[in-house]
Length: 273
Ligand SMILES: Nc1ncnc2c1ncn2[C@@H]1O[C@H](COP(=O)(O)OP(=O)(O)OP(=O)(O)O)[C@@H](O)[C@H]1O
Ligand SMILES: [Mg+2]
Image (cartoon, rainbow, N blue to C red; front, side, top):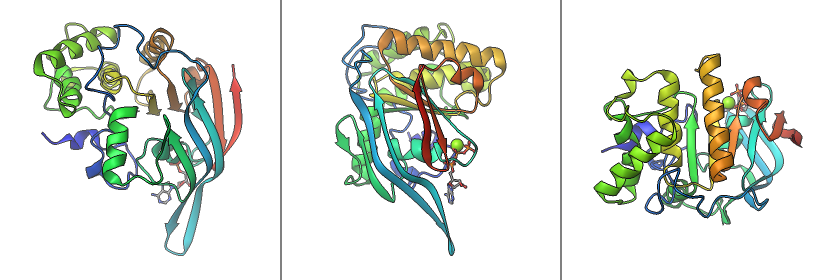
């Protein structure tokens, strides 16, 4: 089965064909479903999961160069529940894509869970994504022909988890995001909020070092946004999952425990709240 439906971040990944892991559960071959114990990632212990140093990204358009990210330093710590806000065009998606290994920096470095990304080839980046990054996108990016459970199991299949365990873990993950009993529904028969819950379960099924979410609530109404942010905050508190969420949504920003803002490709504010 082709993972292409997982490979559309709504943006500008350099080579979508290489991005099998980008929505994926990481360490997908190991460990229980979301609710079973805290696992090695839990904590909020302050250790840097992501370190960006002197990070730069230029986009060249003909004779014109857009400096999307301009010499940015940022550490995301284990257990952070952080929002990345800032005006449209300030570089949020560009930064998330570089941290997630979907786009390559023009300069500087990104280290994710101890691994420097800049020297990696495409296959190594794909593996890094599979092991370490969970992605949640505005448009959910579920595979339409697969059921909710199959959308999650699919990620474990990439890591060679046996069928029975795949199914059990997917069912538990669905229960963890409040979708018990909906395992056989295809995305078209789920609401937007329910689809995004499936996407969250899929992002977390393998216990990633960090979940990167780009405008995760942009297609959701107010009530559903509140429910999704409750879910993610609960996963952060209960399991210590680290979140970095690009967003314009004040309802999401208000729930963050760390508020980061970008302006013109740089960090203009970074506060624990
Ligand atoms: N592929 C590209 N080619 C050229 N310029 C680009 C490309 N991708 C992004 N840019 C430019 O880089 C800058 C940062 O864009 P980016 O998408 O990261 O901003 P953003 O903060 O995510 O905005 P939004 O809030 O609208 O999602 C913008 O000026 C944008 O036009
Ligand atoms: Mg964006």
